[in-house]
Length: 162
Image (cartoon, rainbow, N blue to C red; front, side, top):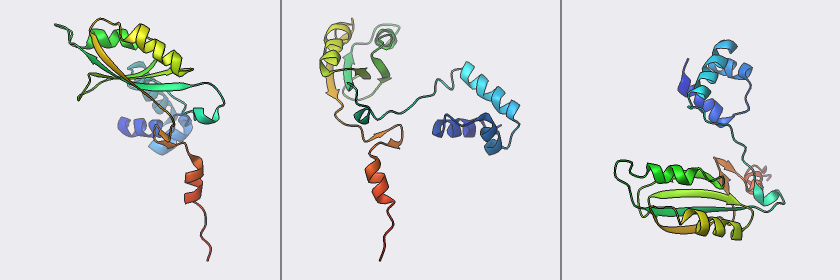
């Protein structure tokens, strides 16, 4: 079975049924289920996510991207610092990056104050962290490949009449 193709199909539609996957893959349903379960067990498939347009959800929600500068440690480099940052429930994504800072941290909270307090009281004091730069997300236009501003998408589909 072409596992890369299976992963691409699941990435584009995580809610697809095993039956539909088997049809697309031209494979037996049991075989597709077996491979999918193994990929989950091996942490190749690490989760299934829902994209939410928080601007329309009528709830308090604040997201931020934080550039974190850090000093590497002997023998572990940045790994120990990354593990400490990753343990916080506020952290949704964490990346080691090249460029002006070592880490890119995405966090979620209810308000800007909550996010600010997280940075000041939990993130910045971590041993090895030397600086942070917080960028608050003001509006989401596209998330995980999905355009959230549906009015623009609908406008593109309007029929042009002479």
